[in-house]
Amino acid sequence: MYFRVGEGIYAIALLRKFVAKESTKGKRVLNKKNIGTVLVCLAMLTLKACRDRVCRNTYWSRAFGMQTPILNESELMFLKLIDFEMFLDEKEYWSAFDSINISIQVKKALIN
Image (cartoon, rainbow, N blue to C red):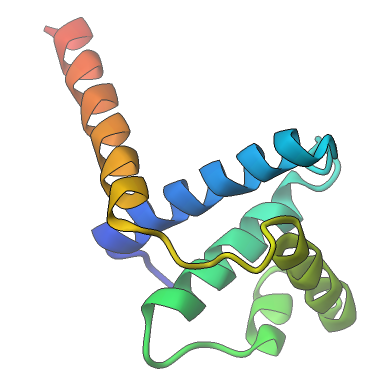
């Protein structure tokens, strides 16, 4: 499985939304123990939002050695935390793009 550039930007913007909602709601969900599961859910939801043909949750659970019911529950928890707001407006998308671009430019400057 691979990400297209636009999907990577979408994933970053969606992760920002997750972290912002976590902060706004005063819920500390993301931690060392579940970071992998959250990232799997992020990738899974990103591809479900961006692609016409998507993999089923059973594919993801097998690929990452997870039990499907746990993955399903984690996906639902992720969606509930972001209030099922999967849509990203243009401003959110380009903000994520700009932050990536700035980061790349800074790294290039440090290398040279």
